[in-house]
Length: 403
Image (cartoon, rainbow, N blue to C red; front, top):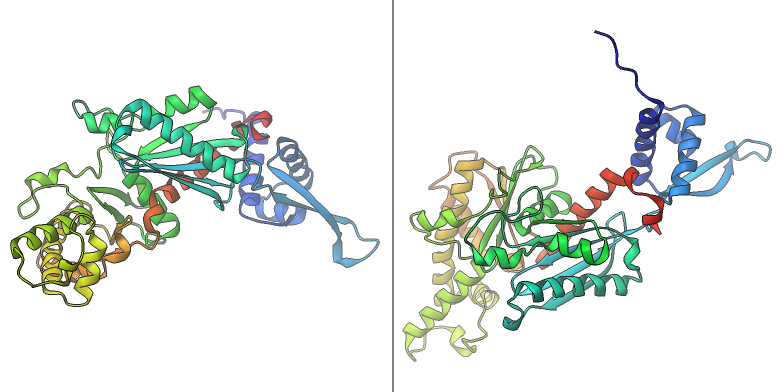
């Protein structure tokens, strides 16, 4: 079979990709170091760097003399320009819109949080809030619209590879993802990636959290409703329609019965038990306003061995153990990471879950950990998703888009 010739254009593109990938992760690289790292010739390396400088991806630093000698050949030095553009990660939750603007190395430049009220319960209003939050983060970062290279948005709905929610007859999912990518692109020309919020939480854990160095892990968003992001052999699993990790199946799991999340389960169980006390003294939680009582209050009381709080945590732990066990059976992960705003308070709960899991999971079992990324876990994952897109497509972005 005859060999297909490789065009000089393709060779140039491949060379530029090698050089840019190396520079992206380094602050100060000499031409000689690039030659050694890429295997390219000196002339090719410097020609490619000149092109990347013209495009705005790379800056040339002050040259140094080789060996520190006055008459030595100046060593050309290059650095990736992390401020060549910005990306924005958005968590478009049911009750809160948060946006983080970041440079091209993932350093946070600004954050904005907007509450979502009942009057915002329309597709048009949600789109306006997402746009408002993104623009506010950019303004706080001192970044103009035209500097945006990608926006990634996480939503509490299944999302397919095209960024759409294709499941029918679910008004809530349709409200959460009303063609966000199309709206932001038409309004501002931004490349916009829409994804499931639990998927982005899993991306965040894989990047900066308990998923680093773990081949197979599940991230469980566990606030008002459960959702999961699944990473297997380093790949985020999606399924044919983006439905991997959707948890409506819990409706038919014995001992679970719904996809209601940890925050809601703990809060509502505690309120129900307080009502049953009917004025009788039996818990320090009675001193709190039941309207504002939340899961963190219950977890704190459980640490103080409040009997009602301990009872609530034990009940929810038994339920969560069954949920984790279903993931152990389906995906066989090494680690399950409980994430979201509630995660930092779940110490007493997860201790019970680990013990309870022995009833359902065969050795060697799985680790169950609380995320350390806090309530911004989805925006962290969204930033990473946007960064990955920019890095993958950097050489396709025309110079005018960079300034």
